[in-house]
Length: 375
Image (cartoon, rainbow, N blue to C red; front, side, top):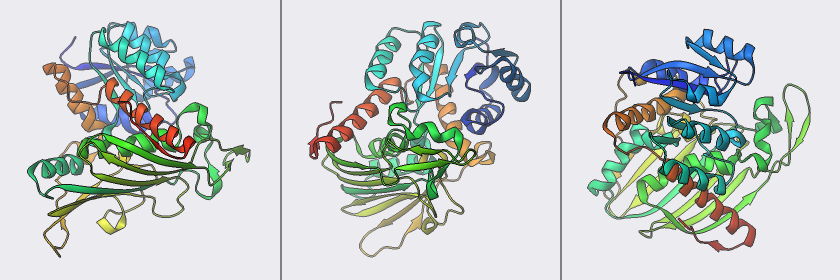
């Protein structure tokens, strides 16, 4: 391997997509990485992507990209149903692997990948990047220092603008089908609940309700009316292993000020992680916690006023587009793991655990009662 980690991205569309919005700006900003290869499903788009992003190699065959000697790290940024096959090809090629979240479409697919990764060389990460937001990391430090005393509860509200007004862009319409495992529960649920667990421990004693409040969306570009089968609301009640009470409401279709707010209450103080206007963050955050700037507010002692304890965000990450910043932070930590053979990033096993949490939510919603988390 060269001094820089050479990256091949599968799903690097030159027209639009998460790779161009988040991954490529992050990689360009970090000196540890070099983008050497891109892959798309069509030759014309692959060649255009290589020219647009400055990659030496363009592929339409994902296995060929993974096996190329100029690729050390394979990044998977395509639709969820294709993840398992593409990750398997990268593991078989013996490369480091970064897969976007959700890791796979089903928990059984995730179990198979975790087993394969256990005997494969390289390091493997799933894109649960919100835990590396500076505000989240500082909150974790404060909790460990006892700033709030004993945590007693956490209240989570997170909304997205997806489907607001009953209209959805064509590229996102596939997420309305629950079989594609890319809806509110999977994407927003995983990205929001992972930092909650990162801060307070694993969720147990899960009771949940799932609802579809907007049963049809209209595709903006075509006017097609599409039936929605993936839930657009999640209500969750749970405990952590340390008996912290957890209450959460996640939903899509927010017309105004889509935002996230996580409020942690303790015996001696409180912490808030938020991107809403009450925390002083400008603009809308329609995409979710993982692609927005979080602020950290803290108050300690009875009647105390909120203090803004958000850490400063140094260059080069501070200069990146907001959607790319947490991705860049995850890449930076991943590079350090690769260099030092450490294990500090969310692994495929982390992804499998979150799939099992989501399974427990589904079971609870189906039976109308409490479900255990088998992790």
